[in-house]
Length: 316
Image 1 (cartoon, helix red, strand yellow):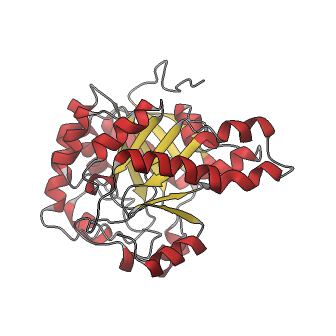
Image 2 (cartoon, rainbow, N blue to C red; image 1 turned 135 degrees about the vertical axis):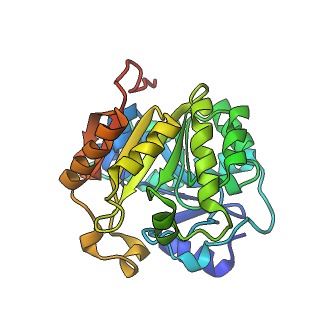
């Protein structure tokens, strides 16, 4: 449960708090798209309309304490959720209303596209990825179902430490499942992700083994967070993870020097787009994947075995 002092801090940081443990925050790219300045890389890679995307989390709790995390880890790091658990339907309704509230001021901005603003009041996509580890919310499959009932696309981002909960997504497949990978081996994983549960790396390895089965029911993604002078080494080991997981997509993305991560890392740890691209090509060479697309403003590249019609989805 979010305490009163944490709730006040979140309000100052422009979050909307929904119920006991859910948060919504307007993404930078949602604002950018409304102003006609371009959308998120997920628009370029997959067709997601940034101005209609809700960025939310059903839990602020996480079982990792990653060195690159932009959050204040004092308030978030624990192995499980505590307190009263809200119902999925309440969360869905609350997050939609919170998104409308957060975007309401854009209607009077002269830079805002009136057409996009009107559409933004009818969101189509949800990114269950704001912060926290969504698989710690015990009703995640029901939450996905509730969004899908409203014709939302659903993107879930997980650290993959709880393979049994990842496998449970087969009961209600999201549109796309992301597994965040921040290290190519266990030693670096413990240095970078700093898990607070036992056998975390072993759990992640089990998740990699489950992903081929998930791919039959949903789009699967490995997202590599690349940190200069820390994990941009051993491309062949990153490639082994790809071979084990057989994901539809691999995103190689730069660590961004923002938020509280600036107290743990240096600005020099943030690689340029060209550095990300160069290292991603090394990984791709070992994994028999190809560079298919890139989004320089986000410092991210997309790797696939081969492109296909339908990668960029069409939405009304």
